[in-house]
Image 1 (spheres, rainbow, N blue to C red):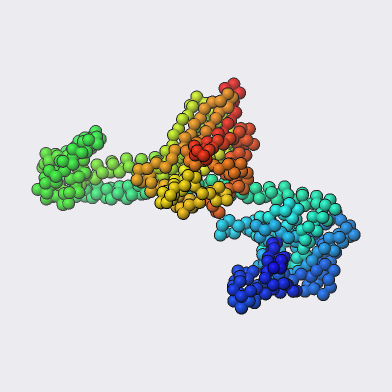
Image 2 (tube, rainbow, N blue to C red):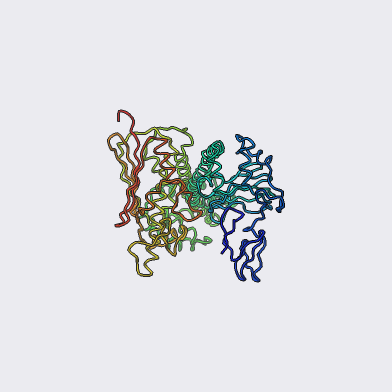
Length: 579
């Protein structure tokens, strides 16, 4: 077994020795590019064996690195030529073709790469997706922070064009960096900016995730009233055409002014009676509908079954129909009955349209309240308002999932001056986590029910339950099926209370609890128990930052796995002085 240095910062084990950068793999093995070598020859391209010109060599595949090239890199600005020569003496150089991976996120780089010519693009990997996060242009250095900290690079780096790259082995670079503090200092000065950029990107991702949750909830909740309003508006347009056509039929039938006035009086009589009808009256109308339909058929009214339902629900009987027919005459009786039925229908449609638009307006108001769009940054609010608007935004995740929400509010709590939209992000993250905990635990229980149920579900390395239903979409579908059958999968309790000089908000779920090894890390930035692509690892880190740093409060967690008594997150915020 021979160890080779990988081109992208890792170690590759080969079956045969490498001579001059060329390697031979055994038949049927996988080449460095992922393709199988059927005949034992090296697959192309061979990323595991870059062709280096070693330090001091003059006959390598590329021209040796020079002092002037290293001098162009700002990492060495504080060194004189003699000191810089120490780095030159251990630097090997090569050409990297366009598209070659220069670094991978998981591997600790074998050395510091000095980009002497060309450019490289950095990508953050998120499941199957890659997201550009930065670009390196020559002359510059790459991987020094990871080498000094013995940590992964965290990104994939790909050559955008043909690049000339010098490399100093990690161990040699560490010794030289400690020997020349100016170099070490320049590397350390970049740690904070790099971490700030990474944190800012992840926080932006978290905000976008929160925005996506809100947008998805709003779209889901708006869909039903919007569809109802659209359908009602279409029906109302048809009804108005019937009303308009009735007036033309009256004129063509020769209805006189006095008769028309009496017809209007009959219509108003029915409309007034319809307004006073109750649901029980509507049940009685079903019995009278058949009798009314017979009366309409006797009068030769077209489609009597359509009119009978609408008229009967308003309390119209055969006697009233007889009075109308006597006033309208044979030719106008049908149009007159359609006119009355249409006016009754229009009233109901307007009420439905008002209710749909009221619901949409209420949802928009909830979102405005959630984001505090019209109240600035610092606002004086009732904590319960933020909790309720957050529940409204998350309603699509709660509705039809078998999750009960219990409110235990202390309404005597005074208003607090807070960053309203930020605190609503706190409630969103905590409630969202509670919902997911219940949904996923239920999926685990359902999966375990098909075999011998374990006492505690098996968990993966991140603490996430391992189950055939792994994946949030499948878990939510399982919860919806249980809810449709009338089942309850869990309860979320939101409790507010006063504790000395603090307002306390507790969000509790009766799920499986958080394992001890995971509990110790849940507030760490970038730590997540979610599957790849489902979480940024900043949800609870963001919550703690908002509560503790922005509001001077505290955040605590109480949880138990054995026995599984659920999880409670407790937020404490200082009350105004004098309360």
